[in-house]
Length: 415
Image (cartoon, rainbow, N blue to C red; front, side, top):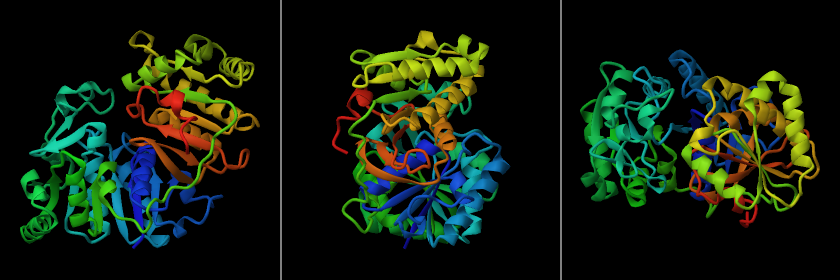
């Protein structure tokens, strides 16, 4: 069977692709543009798993549904016959969606009667117990996600979060930890009972990797599974590892940071201890965007080529810029990526932030990426052929992922 996955943002797609690669699937990530443009990569249909990266987490419900169904039909045309809907491990959504409506329509399109809901990713501190989602030791609604500007999470119970999003007749039940701890056959029996009862969604507890492996072994042959990328770690691909060789071993080390998350801020501060930083001045950027971008580019290229360079807007909570400037910063960083891509001295770029990563991939015209070895949970180099720089290596990092020293060691790790 070939696995087709639909992710609701780009860094979520690469996160899932890393997990699948580690599980033995040769995996290709296809940005949405790749659905309508021929890829310059290998034919995705020759991969064991194809992950389509959408940008639907905060789009309108109808837009998310339409684009997800389009991705499903494209994956089916490539030969995929089993499917994975990947969303954030913190279940980022509003009372209207988009997780529930997309899952509903995918189930209907596949004539499937039931799926699991498994957002847990213990390696990054996301666990589910008695149907309640925790971020490390805190319930979701007590974590920093409570005040997320787009998807504030004010409840930790997955069933209560999901119920307003799905059809009124959709029964939601719990696949509890005790059942999962009894093993694969116990989970399969619970699934059969849920099917007989007409249940549509089973919210799955998981507090460690063993739980996820049991869950994946029991439910991995469902027509559709849904969850974070943690669940993919328990699937079994045809290889020991599906990773390709990625070697950004030379050239300038440049990090482009659009994320304002606390994790990324700490990574920036750590990198500035040994490297150099270029702080984006949003006032200058608004005044003369083109000139400001050119100045930053010259600053990068005139610096010591052996010194790590970090371009950023936010390194401390005091640096937080207006949300109105977010799109302008994304434009700045994606424009820099395009210009740096043309430099022979640049063989790899590390991009921090989901929205920024999407903007960079779009600007570079990338239509497919192969996944290299993992740098940290949810973080890896990917190989991204493109017209200007065939073989450019990228790290596309979600804002909240990675250890504090990620920026400084990304190029030194054997990849």
